[in-house]
Length: 240
Image (cartoon, rainbow, N blue to C red; front, side):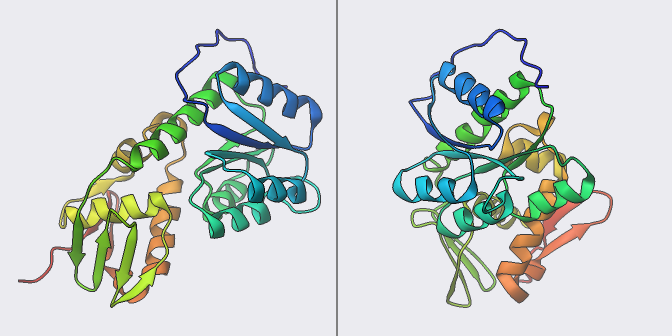
């Protein structure tokens, strides 16, 4: 059962549109009801095919995605969404073992909520993800160059040796933060606090997954991101 006893506080959410994908009718209806009470515009689907159909027709600010859904599972739906857009995804699942969480983070999900869950905490995660994504457009980094890597905030473009590399918005921000401060060590807690803005409610391993994805996408240039054993991550200072 979901823990739903709480006082709902309505925040100004500017009618952000959320897609809820959940095959259990009671949970789906409960999520839709609470999110609408918070002021969100909400659409819902009960399987992966219906979810992707809705996603292709409408613009969403967030997708809340159960993993064990019919036709196409949550991992498959998330993969399609992340290939097409930077829309954040929160996985919702009864699969709570470590291997399940790691698979979720490796699938580029922005957060992972395990059933049963606290509705107040869940709603705070939703607000935090939307706040984080909404603030991205106001950030300005101008042009940043480090070795073979160049970044432009206005176009969200990343080039490695002149070749374009596709990053999600959070991967872009993570890379920019590290490159702007070469030599500085960032702990996982610091990165969660600075980039996710809800470090009290998210597993630190999501940082490791994003670093892993960044290194993979950047190829050899990704070797500039160093693991500082027992502390966190940094980018080495360039040789003068």
